[in-house]
Length: 449
Image (cartoon, rainbow, N blue to C red):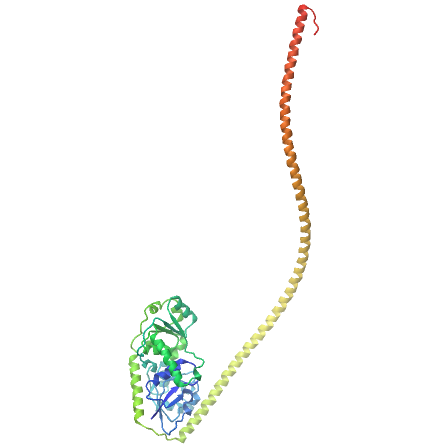
């Protein structure tokens, strides 16, 4: 039997290529590269079935289900998105053919609890298999290094780890040109990423298909988990360390950064079981050839189902677009109302501006008048200040002359006192002389003086 390898041709996500890489490791060869979204269109070169390991996320194009009758499938590590695959949402006659394909090719190995519950709820034989990337084994001759891989995390996480002084490699699983690459080149790129993860001290990521391969490669990994991941992460969290960005930034995982610890070996029972199933599937496929007998009724049912699914898909898309249009119309109307309100406010503000501008002109005129008056008063002040300085100088000069005159007055007063004393002494002498003369006259007759 020929072998096919499942891949997603339009994907720019390296995580999808790592999924392909995990199944490719089990294949002895690849005869056909089969696109996940076009499974119904596959037709090999010979009228014989092609063995295909069906580990994937199904699917963006539910109208392209079930797969081609030329595919001999092994359903392991499958995930059916309940948000995209409407034929798994209920037991309806128009969905019976799609659901019957899974019953015919069961049991279905599910990689998450959400898919398991959905299939079992529809009476489809299913079990929890885990993810096929858990079967990846460490590459030989890869030495551990000290860098930490930060894969699709926020800038806050990057800044936090850098501030702690660690060597980091900031990476992303989103590659814009991946969809243009050949499948083999995409596998080489996936292997390059896996080797980088294996050599890392530890890996911090928001990507499921980064953390799960790291588990198989024995690299400690920490996943930033959010409630919206529950559909795909449920039942896989037991293999991983998970946290929120808030808890990490609060320092609750600093110990993990210092000493990264591997989570556990609980995943091995699922990894070993998956490996055994894939190996047996490949061994059985090598031993047999299985021609295909085209069944008209089957293809008729397939055509009817695809028309139903396509119609419902178009109706659902039309309904979604209609709801989006109504939401946009509501937003546009709100914006128009807001615009009218803003225009009214703008008109009021413009009138207020004109009023304030007129008041400004009035105040400007008053300011100019006061400024002119201020200049006039300033000139008068300068004149008075100059006159004051002149009078002050004259006062100082007169004060100095007054001091000199006061000194002269003191000298004159001193001389006057001496002269007054002298005059008193002269009067006393004259009086004494007159007394003597009178005495002489009495004694000897009158003498003329």
